[in-house]
Length: 569
Image 1 (cartoon, one colour):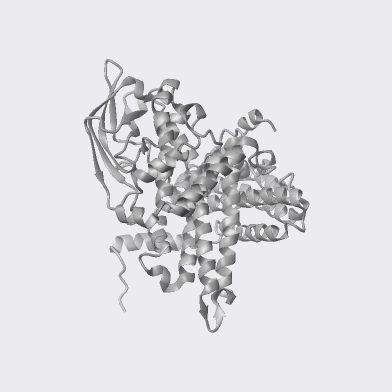
Image 2: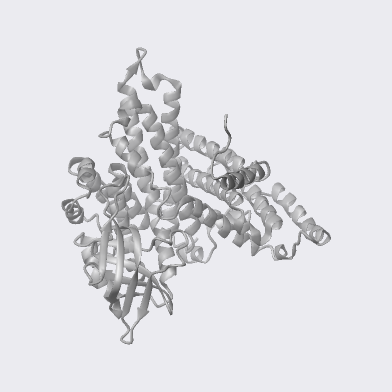
């Protein structure tokens, strides 16, 4: 299907909540071709060579900065403006190409990946997406070359996930300039050069480009648990005057610019974390094949082998999910916000679990402060929190999916718990429709025949997701916004289905290209991942009906009332 047609379709995940499998959005699996692929491979190789031979993660942690020399070197290699247009000195890579190179940063050092991600994924991105030609010409060349670093300035002391209710204010002056006042916190690169600052004004939210060193800006560095080489800042603006030409978009566009930037920027987290997981696996293989106990290599023991196999399988699934999502952008799909959110959640959760398994395999060795896994443990814990806390991203996914579903159920708003006779009339066609969906679930078109069982699982789970979403809407109505445990389960089910779709799409292309015999090892990994995710989806959907939520809520309320644990021996 042409990109223009894809741009007019709803997101793949919103379609899942409707019980539909929009195969044309995800089949065939997106692969890079031509100059974009060649440039990506060249830049990824350059990144890996530099990061393995020159860059020292331990030094960056010790010095508490990745180093101006590192930034300069990366700029010289063309690695600080990966997606920026070539006419501004960038490399002009696709979203997939950019995220593939970012994988190399994640493989080397979580801290450097964050510094580069802040600079490129969210720092330079607003200018790239929304800047005028004049604004791009003014700032992008220096950002692309690494001569300047960019920051994304959104979070505040009283504003985190609730990003709409900003307290920082921008007052428009008679000459069109702005005066900025407020406090921001946890801002990577916040003491550097080009800051995209989000604030409220009488004309709505605004996005302003503020140059480092402008009078009235004060910065203070935070002392963090991990990412010690990342200069995380508190940034205070006191009567900071911003020229009129530094406004991005129009007054009132600020919130949209912030959210679209984050939706786009989250994708590199998926690939950076998959790069980190590959490093964890390499370290684990090296340790378990050289360390011997009971006259055997550690990897010969089943519980060790199980962890190695789990990491291999999860990397494959996360990688499939991440690059399907970047492929949506490259194919011109307009709405990829839910896929981006689910990829971020899956990556940060799975990466943390993988790190713990690798740590366990190393035993006491990894607990030594100078071990790379010890540094990774300090660095990785933040990933489920920043760029959208995972709980918030789950709620975001579920509520947007439910909103799409509710628009197809105009009768939902008429159901009243206090009027059961009316509800019966509405529920009768609903029950008939659910039966019909069970008999005729939509299938993923274009998948290889050798993945028929997995395609059938996806179809059945998609129908069940639709049914579960309908049941929740009809049971709770508008109160579904408060039912976060329901939201979590629906979001986890949707993410599990999407991960399976990505994996089936990917392996189908491999089977078609290489044949079954040559692809058997990869197919085994793909099937194992799909089966594991099918179990995740099954548990999530079953727990909507069978759970201990009533007891959990009661215990939580009582513990709060008691001020803590109150049961004495």
